Length: 373
Image 1 (cartoon, rainbow, N blue to C red):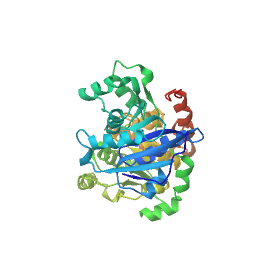
Image 2 (image 1 turned 60 degrees about the horizontal axis):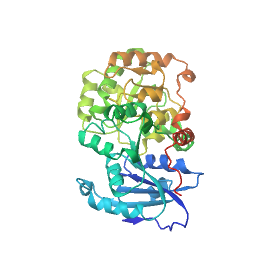
Image 3 (image 1 turned 90 degrees about the horizontal axis):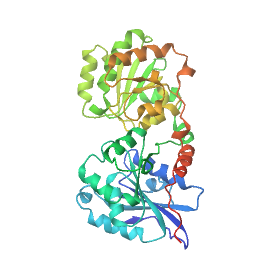
Image 4 (image 1 turned 135 degrees about the horizontal axis):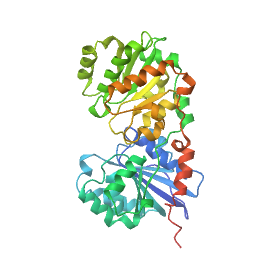
């Protein structure tokens, strides 16, 4: 167990944040919840169940203390007794008001390893479809509250736990630090040079694993159908890698658009280059939220997305949505956009998807326990 070198003072009140790991979007998830307590009397200790100690992760966690339990994924299968013992030791080390645990495994460890109230944050669908998990949650329901990252995830949990009061299963949207992301993003000219895209082409962008869940096949089919109506030299640029790369490239050849479809591969910190695109399209199958949409909006891009999962909540405009797998409807949306006044087509990041908006929402939910006498 590795911790940052910091000694808690007497009389301080703490929040314990427990994360499965910091891969992918989950480091920023930890940051999002840590900053909810900035400007309050609470300090935040963030614990990562898996993942090697990292100074960069410590900085990115926005926490007063960071602890790395350094377990492997294999070590936290099954009963996770060692992790429960470690968690119990941490929970007893100072005056924690509650635990915020991300995903089911940390919720499980936190409830068995302490007597703290636990706020469980869920980032995916189906976490309580298993009967065993329903029984577990019901057993601990007096000190467990649940948050979904979208209304779609919240409603999925409510359907699986029908006996719970609605106020115990609520929504707290994922969010971004808009100014920080915009400061990272490079100009259109620099982005296109870095990605090898021509300076004057009209470019449709997509970012995601090349995986069936992301459904880039529908994107390629829709783009191919719309291409005759798009500006001359238009391109589709797909940023990401995965097991479907060969199949997707073959589909572009089959549809006669291989010269107009660019596979950019895995691009480190890809959101820096979003201004290279003229439009961003998300074709994912039931995305629980759609953080990439917020990052595209922060770049000032118009966006299109499937009308399922959490994406409609992020986009918020019916004309920017299309039915899952409906490449003809997508083609119609694509064909209309180049002739749309750019300013009117852009999507702004709504307040509820910013740190400030989430702060107000979290504290309005009344989830913080009163101070012990």
